[in-house]
Structures are given as structure tokens and as C-alpha cells.
Amino acid sequence: MQVLDTVGWVGDGDDTDFFLAIERTFDLRLRLNLPWTTFGEVRDHVVAHVAAFGGGGTTCATQMTFYRLRRALGLGRHVGTDAPLSPLIGNKLRPAFTDLEADTDLKMPATRAGWLGIAGDFCFAVAVAVLAFATLAPPLRIFAAGASAYTGLWLRYIDRRRLPRGCDTTGDLARLVTEQNRGRLARDGARLTASEIWRIIQQLAAEESGIDPNLIGPDTTFFRAKARAA
Image (tube, rainbow, N blue to C red):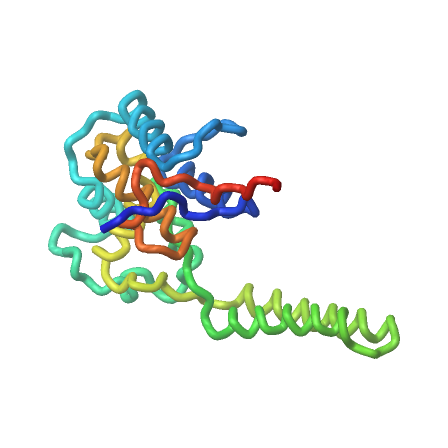
């Protein structure tokens, strides 16, 4: 498969989102104005960081995460990776994930809005539309927008949230949590090879670009070439 010369970013924040994802995933801080132009340079930096600050471990990262989650949930050894997650988490998903983050020292994946949360987002959209397009007198317009926004906040507050997509079992949760905490787990003794680092970088770049991750090679550049002035 022919790799791309560039992913064609234009510098409107797409590169920033990618580097923020790199920082979050590998638990590192990148300084501003880095002179990188290719994804291979990102890979080399992350590999060097893991070599310098990682634990040099050999334990499977997903296995380590699963054991932490199982212990934090108070489950016994009989509970395997195929155990349904919903009955173990309960109905109060938001505080449950907050407690898991505190107990495991690992970032949890983002939950999805339930029906009440979706209705709350609709209320916010209505509030914006009222302010922008309504022909009501200013006091009435402000009151209507404020009431709609307040309703949206209340609905989002009482929303019970839903599990992340594709997170039906304890094994699914362990996989998602592992993908977001590679750097932290490596420092705790999990295995993180150069090939695994490269795969993750490809995936993060592909998510930002909307392309096949296999099309991104070490020499693929971030930005499209600027046209020369005539």
C-alpha cells in the first residue's frame, strides 16, 4: 500500500489536537514550536521518552489495566474479561468512572450522553437560536434564552450518561483505558514497544485526518505544501 506524502493539514488546529492526543496517550509534555514536520519524528521522540522514563517492563498493558479495574470494582478472580460491564458499574455512571479514575490512577474514556443529555444539548441549541434569530423584545429574548439554557444545564446534570461505544464488557473497558494511558502504564512496568508506539501514532493521526492509518508512513508530513507565488 502506497503511503501518503502528506496528510494535508492546514494548521487550523488539526495539528494541535493531534499533539494533545499524543501528550494524553503517552503521558508526556511537548514544548511549543517543535521543529517536527513528519510523523517519524514524533515516533522517535515518543520512543526516546518511553526508553528514558518507562519502566522497561514486560507485562501486557491491557492485562495490567484489567487487574486494576477488577480490584477497584471489588470483583473476585472469577470475573473474567467477558463479564458484562453494566451490572458491575450500576446506574450512576459518572461517579462510578470518577471513582475508578481515583482508585486506578488511570484516565477513563469519555461517557456518552443519554437521552436527557441529548435533550439538554438541544436546549442549548435553542438558546443560541433565540439569541441570534428571535424577533422578541430584548428582555423577553434574554429570558427565553436563559430559561432554555438553564433547562439544558439541569437535564445534563441529571443525565445518567451511557457507556462508551464498544464498551460492553470488562475486557472492552480495559482495552479502551489502556489505549488512553500507554505512557503511564509503561512507567508502571507495562510493555510498550516501538512498533506499538508507531501503531498508536498512526491511529491518532488517522482519527484527526479521517484516513486509513496504514497510509501514514514515517516520512509523511503534517502539512500540505504551500503554493509558490508566481
